[in-house]
Amino acid sequence: MFSFVSKRLSLMMMTKVCCFQRNFSSALPPLVPVKLPSKMETHFWYVLPDEVKSESLLSQYSELLSPREKKNLYHMQGDQFKKSALLARVLVRTTIARYQTNCQVNPRSLKFKKTIYGKPEVDWENGDKWCPPPLHFNISHTSSLVACGVTVNVPIGIDVEEKQRRLKNKILAFAKRYFSPDEVKLLTAISDPEIQRQELIKLWTLKEAYVKAVGRGFSAAPFNTFTIRARVVKMGGFHHFDTQHSEASEIVVESSDDPENLTRNWQFALLDLAGSHYAAICIEKENSAGGEAGVPMRLTVWKTIPFVEDERVSGTGAVVPISGLIKQL
Amino acid sequence: MASVTGTSACMTSLSCSFKQTQVGRISSVNSVSLSINGKSFPSLRMRSAPRFRVSCAAKPETVDKVCQIVKKQLALPADTTVTGESKFAALGADSLDTVEIVMGLEEEFGISVEEESAQTISTVQDAADLIEKLIETKSA
Image 1 (spheres, each protein chain N blue to C red):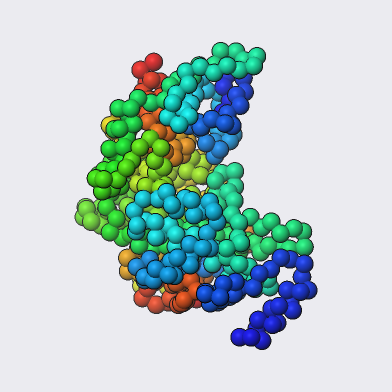
Image 2 (tube, rainbow over the protein chains, first blue to last red):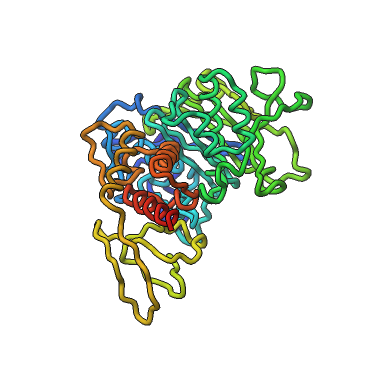
């Protein structure tokens, strides 16, 4: 561990970039670094708040936040909610800090800003010698699960929702108000109310993930102007999909406003996460010659307690693909 | 920045129902409701400005009704303080809660909220102001 640190230190002297030793606090151990995802690869990190019990750890986590984040947290109501909000900030800061393999970044020093549409992104302010990685991220959380998705070069949107989530409004009334006519038709055709509710929640997470990936806000892509549905894909070819069924289903989005372009470029995955949540991931497909169909999303999933424990859970029972072309790594 | 018919108003020091995410999306509006710390300002003097109609902040009864609907949607304990200044995000509303709240408000007040407007709401007061504006437009 010490030779690792001294190599890092000499590297740091050579660069003009302002670097901090990852081990910035004597109380917290260093973050385990991770290689950036390659193209067409998605990294997905999540924390289960119920697994984070130590008050002293939570207190150390709070120290990572910016003054503004601390202030926002202070104003939040409800302990469970506050905790997951704290963990969301900690997860995004530590996750991004892990990927800085050439220059160690202190998760506390990361700055965030918003695009003109309100989408959060990292504010790499360190001047011209420093080329920040083309890293994209998106966060989502409920009171019982906090998640952060990471990609390189392409935008990403994620959404997580408790499987047991109940609506206050009636399911079809809600769908008619917010979803597209085709989606309403699909939901109406489901006779079992419990299945109907589950399908609504799944569809909601997919739609949210899409809007967040597009990154232009709810009003740029009103939910009722686009339809998301699963399309069966023949199993021929070299791609190996993770699926329980003999046919893989690809998730596609069609826009009533823009039938041709925008919507062909998005790739989706829908997962049953930790047995308790639906997680939807939407990434933009990189432009490849010919626009290959049927290429799966390469996905690696970690469950983490930052600074304490990281567990790669892709390919285990914690991550069960529901639909979308997915290859877990 | 909101643009008002024929004039540009400098709003930087005032809290306004229109948020920064609305850049490029606001076309001319005839009235803007302004509130500063809950007090409403019925008129505003501008240098070389033509008439500028400002509507008052929402009635307390409207704010109260919104608070009730929010409390119910978010299943907040009875002793939770919810006021006009309460931010939905701080109360624990996620995006699904927010759209459910909007639906609840539409039903309660008999109005229809556009996605663009819904996106600008961050506090209970914002919601109440928007509701009254929509009611006013509807009955006009």
